[in-house]
Length: 619
Image (cartoon, one colour):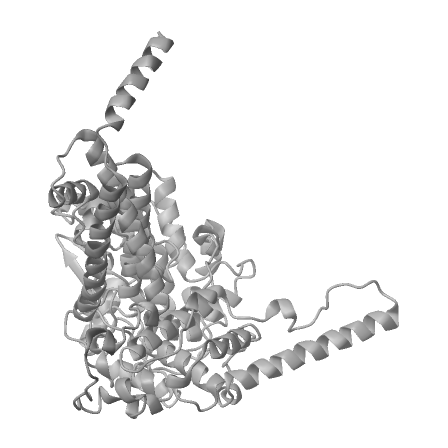
């Protein structure tokens, strides 16, 4: 039977071979498809920036996704002769390690790229050439089409990395033409022609300010140009963007951005490697130094410490071992996440600047590194024992005074110190979601209290999935949260924690809570590890629900995670009942606390003070 089957296969192959495409026909299909693919990729690239200006997705990230997945699809088509639909998994970069992987179909992504599909394109090319389609010819044509698509993608990537190679130079006399001086097009465009002008003199920080002015999605020049309902850059993001430009400016020593070279990026990368992250820019003295000066000082400190340690070892005749100094070679250098952020901002700045003034080739791929840390290992949940230890500290059992909240006494005050950690434990909400909440975001519906997590005047949300309802645990109501909200409303307040508002407006309310309160709480719990932070409250809630068998879609709604599909009526009564069951799965670590008489912070401690934050210093 095997011999018969093999003989039949040989006979069929011989017949099919006579019905294939010639080399000339395949070459013509390839040529025509390449022209189509070049135009399509250029149009797709331009459309991403149009969308970016309208709705603020990351155009560069979207482009990289489409190019990478298109290449995979084309390679699959070359190998198999057909591109079968498949899932595309994406994991957005964020500070929240618990963000889920999102998935979409390749066919859906292809629609956003005006990709007709290799099958349709192969048929069109055969018709264009007047070739009668047969089964074998269609398969061969699909393979050629995919080869052209893959080749066009590779060509497009090369053009992105070296824009000057996009078009070959064309001599004017080849067309029997005479060069004619270009008409004046104004100050904005003349630098691109002459190589001089206002764009050519901008420093990196001046260019960054110009970038803000030209891109309202960033908030504009003053940071206030975001249209209502549109997500824009936060003050913190703007500050980080400007800081990256400042670092580059310090490395370039006064030269304009137009003169930046790859060597400048290499120098900056070297500085990043000699920064002591724990102390970098923490003191006022350091903030008046350039990154080059700070890196040089750190390098000298490390050399001096290592020489001193080596001298001690020789004097004591000890075997060579690692130096035990406060600052060592292993302890310096910014993290991969931090340097990647700086490089991403600089890449965005210089690519935008290049549209107005030509720049030398800058290869950021040489510096942006893959962060190989496992997101699950970056933060650990709290144990129940740690939860009990936290909520048996003086802020919840009794403090010495308003200024000495971490010293035992008999004073209990209802404020951010008291409520933020408890809300975090029983809700799993993000730090800024809790700290930036307004009083109107806490509501009672059908006899049940709930948090309405939504953008407000104080802060936005991480993504659209973060807009949600979170049932309030009965324990929070027992310990006075509803009474606290009512009392603040009676005082004329609008914020849930008005004492966390930063006067300067730069720090988020979550940052203020961390710096003024959380560091003191964390220091008082001796067995906390470096992997346990405020975000660990969120891990605790979600992991507890998972262990209790709560359905994944309920956990996702509770946490504000994206789902691959959602149903209408997401927050029906029945659904909210399921969310309340999920909340009840979180262990009660405050049952032993008494429901104390409500006491607010004095009005003057909820208003602006000379300390730079609202409220007084707390010990």
